[in-house]
Image 1 (cartoon, one colour):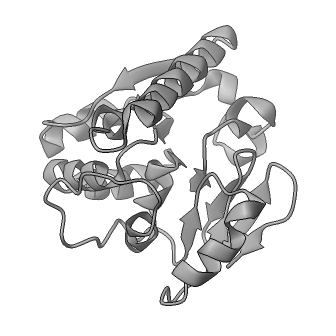
Image 2 (cartoon, rainbow, N blue to C red):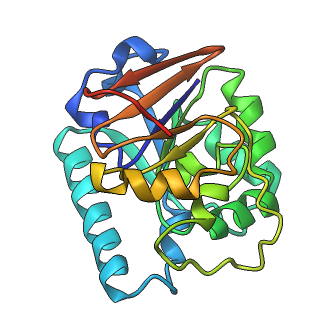
Length: 216
């Protein structure tokens, strides 16, 4: 099962126990911060915003006594990665540079490791970049208003765990811009605001977090 979101506030704003193999309070969370370590090209304001977000997010998880471990998977070998992540019930992938994240996913064998672990009921939760890499490709990231370092990534094929695309951090003011830039995306594009998430299990997709699902 996957849960795709923009910034993950649903993890503490809504009850998601019904979607998990056991209650969230009993889950061990691998908090993957790899994408956040490579934000060189987005400007000081964006980097500061990301640092503040992660600090607030960790503080909230601490307040709620969530059992999480912060992990950077860069440089790990596949066997090491599998051994590390197999200790957790949830793999929570933080936002940041999606191209760097995809580069590391390929280097470490993360996709194959996650496919094996998810078959054993490990839950994948993506936040922004973590959601983008679960899509068929990073095409949405190439049309971002932010300027990411591509980190040598030319083939933007991603993990393809779902057959649709997401746009994170959506606000209504983005609609016209998205409609223009989504014309050549040959699959549904779901725009998620910062309170929403998509729960994907087998062939079902469920929106949690309130509001309506905007489809481009």
